[in-house]
Structure formats: structure tokens, C-alpha cells
Length: 333
Image (cartoon, rainbow, N blue to C red; front, side, top):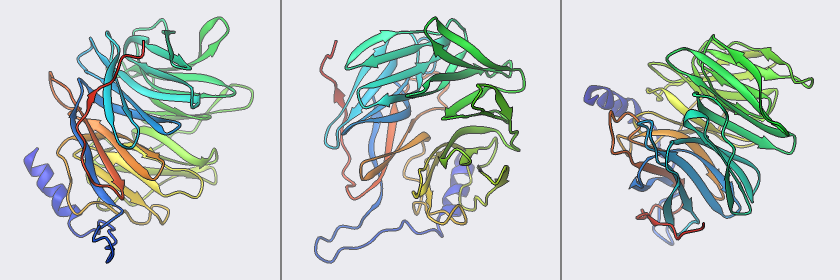
């Protein structure tokens, strides 16, 4: 681990941290920083913007929970236990007041106007991703050891399986796309899925449009793939040594990526080059990245711990580099 980290530091050392010195304030920014470390009782695995508040979910990865929720309003960070029995892997919703969080053993938490309910899928699989919009709700997951994956859609009668595979686990869903361990499909208008196989193990997908998306992953090193003009293309990842777990982008926005051994980076030129910190700001691992208001936040923690105790780490790119200490959220139920 120390040799890998040293190599990663050396690979990053020739890149600019993209700081801009202000002669009036003396503050150098926007810049990279760690917002908070050793947060709560679990790693933080994903985030979602509920208005001015950022919500991040995660948990202890030992298989017995808890599943945690972190709340950040730009000034205060607090954590709470959302479920007792399972870690939560992903969060998404159709609006600022409604969202879903999914996780181990088919766990589904549905929140509407602050009211929490369980809508679990009847499966032993871990649910790694969820997407919810005005057209419906889809959850994805699988069994890593068995190499099997599945996609469910929420219906009036419960959760219906709409895609099943033994070719690889399905890790994430974004709009009509689902990606996983060297697998990818696109959901057509009639509800069927068209296979669009990638050349890499993919962890997360996101794009500016459904026919122009980015996906990240890798098994032993970083991989960034772009789907454009009906095909996948592998992009240069110089400076991104470690495997990647998360990506965030949108139409006309930079491409932000997060990964192992504190990887934080963005590209403002379509993936031709990457801007990264001068050196990794943490030895912990980032699992997701999310743009919230004027900041970009990186969610992770000690993901590779063998037995815990697990905790969260939050990195940041923004004009404020002051770290905060997390507190316990006031009871909402």
C-alpha cells in the first residue's frame, strides 16, 4: 500500500491544483481540501442535493449495518442512523422532497416530505444503485461472488425484475443506462434493454445527454470511457493511477471523478487532461462525487477496512477550505 501511494503521489506531482491567488483577500481558491474526516459510523458512498441541503448515505460494510445518513447545509455537518440492519450504497430522488436510498440485502428506504418508509426488494442481493424521476424508479444490484446482476422497476404491485444477467454485477443506473462489471445496457422506449458492452469494469455512469455519457471504473488502474456516436472510447487517464469509483458531470459541465487512495480530479477539455491536487489529501478512498451549489464534494472513507470500525471522509473543491467536525443530527422521527 505504501509503495502504491508513493507512486500515486509522484504521478500527481506534476499537475496543477488550479488555485487562483486573490491579492485582496489572500485566499487561494477554488481549491482542494478535506471537508471532514472520520465522520459517523460508516463510509459515505453517495450523495444527493435536496434543495440547499446535501444528503449523503453509507454505512458499516460488515453486512449488519448500520446504514447512515449525513446532512450538510454549507455550514453544519451532522450524521444519523437511517436503518439499523444494512449499509446504504446509493441515493437519488425525483424531487427535493422525495428520495430513495438503497443498500444491502434489498434494502430500500423511501422518504417523502420527511416521512421515512421501507420498501425493500425481496432479494439477498446488494442494491448498488437507484434512479428515480417522473417516469419511474429503477434499482440495480447483484452478487459480486456469483457475478450476477439484476434491474428492478417499481410498479403498483411492488418491484418487478426487468433485466437479469449472469455476465456481471450491475452497479449503477443513470436515466436509461445501467453499467457494471464489464457490462452495460441501454433501456429502450419499449422497456427492453439493448446491450452496449464496454471494455472495462464500470462502477458509475453519467452524462450530459443519454447518447453522450461517461463511465468510470477499472480493476487495477483507472478507466474512463466515453459513449459517443454509438460506441465506447477509452480516454487518457494520465495522472489518475488508481481505479475510479465515481463520476459527476452534466450538460456543459466539467467531468469530475473520484477514486481509490484519495483520487480527486476534473477535466475541462473533454477528458484530454485532468486537473488534480498536487498530492492526495487523504489515504482513504472516495466512492462518489457530487456537485452541490458552488462546491464539488467527494464521498468516501475507509472502504477497504477488513472489519471496521468504518467512518466517512468528505473531500471538497471550492472557495472554502475550512474543515468541520460532524455532530449528531437532531431526531427527525
